[in-house]
Each structure stands twice: as structure tokens, then as C-alpha cells.
Length: 81
Image (tube, rainbow, N blue to C red; front, side, top):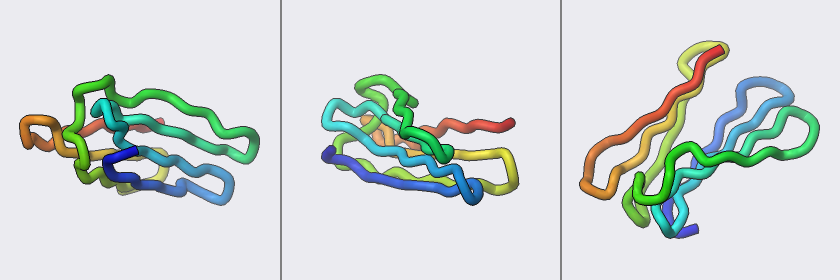
């Protein structure tokens, strides 16, 4: 990992973690009281190397993630129930 890392808890038994890889992909892992599961949020080339990444849950059942793209743009992804 060369980029940033951010995490969020959406309740007593649910955690999410996102990070930027050396290839510029945004990876994620989540835990809901059982085993950790991992997925790719954005493919290689989506984030600048050493970029910052942050997240927020503005209300129950939502998550938003922002990172810096390779061209300096602000990129985002969101999830809602």
C-alpha cells in the first residue's frame, strides 16, 4: 500500500476499510461480525499514487468515499441501502 487508508463503522457489528494500492486501484474490505470480505471499489489507474482517501456516513444506511484521481480530480463512490 502506498496511498491513503480510511475506515468507517456503521454500527456495532459492521466496519469498512478502503485503501489505495500502488497501481492506483481503490480496494475495500468489510466486516459484519463474521469473516472479513474484500472487493475492488475502483480499478487500477483510478487514483493517484500516494493520494488521500476519506469517507463519511451522513445518515444510517449510507457510505461515501472520496479520493484524488491521477489527474488531480476528486473522485467518489457511494452506497445506500
